[in-house]
Length: 191
Image 1: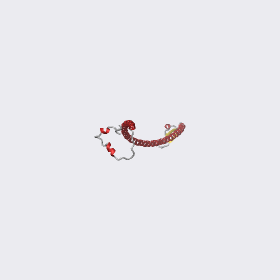
Image 2: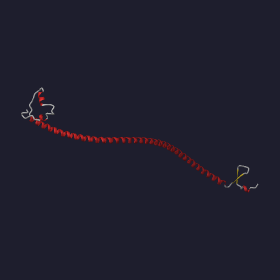
Image 3: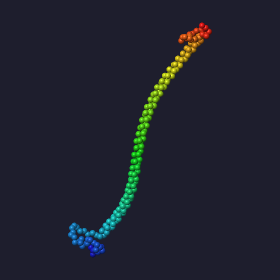
Image 4: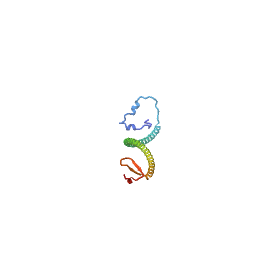
């Protein structure tokens, strides 16, 4: 192969650093079929593989770039998540404070409602008392009106008696608790 120009002098260039020598390989026992490979096909395959390798490198670089962007995004998202977590903890603390205030306000509201219920009960009792007082006052006013009407009747009777007695003189006997009616004037009587 070498004499046909198919092998190169690479072996001689790296002679002192090679670990494995072609001669050693040739001395090894062989098994299987040996096929002849044309170097032109190998060069085409090499170019194809190199092209694929270059394409794969580009893809790898794009993937690496995407990975770096993803890492940056991940760090940014992680920072946002940390800030959000801190904000949530603050809001949770504030929510607990609001809950405590709400419970306190609810307790105060319950006390106020109880006082309002008591006040309403007292107000209803006062209303009932006022209604009873109003009924009593109406009853008293009715009795007073009846009494006034009776007094008017009695006054009329008294006026009638007075007019009947105007012709009589009324005097009291000295030793008696009785009144005496007479048509004469007691001062004109001499005993």
